Image 1 (tube, each protein chain N blue to C red):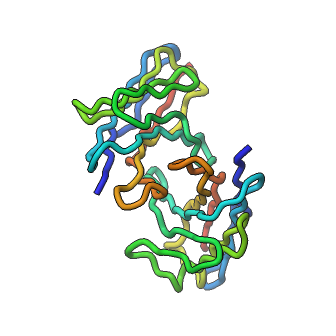
Image 2: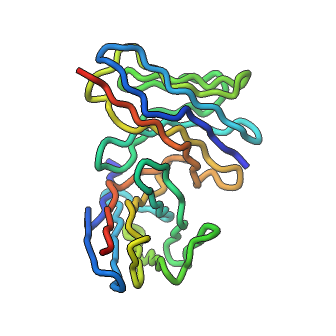
Length: 113
Length: 115
């Protein structure tokens, strides 16, 4: 079945630093790929998604490009803010059901002022 | 739009009691809702898929008699943790299937602490 693997955290950066959180996938075919964000004490929010190879998802200054050559969907942001401190999850639908989503282990990001 | 609420947001109960958690889609109808649990600093684990008007489908290893799910309407699904024990303490999150394919909207979560 499909699976996603993301870099372990925690990741601590200074404000305005460049961010990369790695995510790779294994899948049958080319499923959609997602990044979700979970702020402290809250549920998950969809941050961005890409539905096919070479697509780039973007939102709130974050970007991720669906690269089939490297089976990756790395999350990037050029200049992080303290408010970006959260846990980020890479995710993909399962092979058996597009409605079910499997999540990576999550990467906790902390931004220092 | 596409707001999902959960109630309560947190609950503390004694061991052996049952706790009901509600998940509501506030401005849309959701044929399918999902229940997840999340342990501290871990990822979400899908517990079950809840379909309106039919029995829930549980993931492997999840006790259906322990975690009762009812999806009686297109806007409400409930999860009841029966005879709760300290090991059931966790963060429970629901999500609702959106109109667009592969879109899920997540509730804010319910933190359960069993003493």
